[in-house]
Length: 207
Image (cartoon, rainbow, N blue to C red; front, side, top):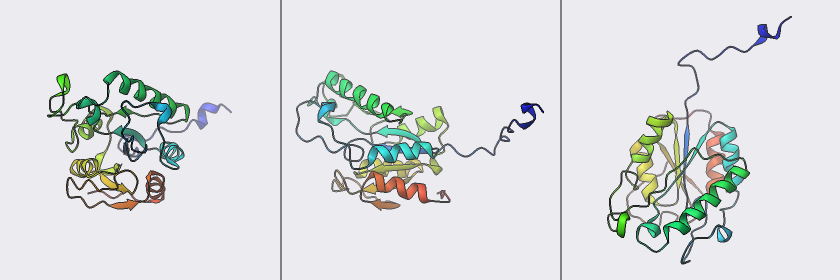
């Protein structure tokens, strides 16, 4: 009997699972804070405990992984843009080698108090919500089914404003910046625990 008879049916329109985004802050959540180094070097970078395995499991479970964050050190001239671009290229290559394909790398290099060409505002500058609505419009991410994981109030407030659920971590700043008021939906010790919580959820609540 032909195998064509056993070809699985395509899902009916409207029955596909929602495209969920996992928006992960870079410094302090995925990576330990860089400290006072003049320029970032990937050889010096340290991932928070269990972060890589956690992101791989999340991706395998159907989450679309996004990196987010303000790169104030570049905007204000403390880091050379070329050095940062080299670092970021090495970071993405390393993630890919571990089976983690970042859908989009949202890194804002601009700031109203920046220097040179980076002295400007941007809709991608957290806590603005530009990156979230860009992901929704371009990639079809359903924000009400998505989560933001971060160590500062900036990305958590942005995620909440965009309609995502938000999880704080006790690594990095551990919300000590207190720039904005935020009440996380979940508080975790690190990114690895946050992913375990998300993967354990049976129903993804909508706002």
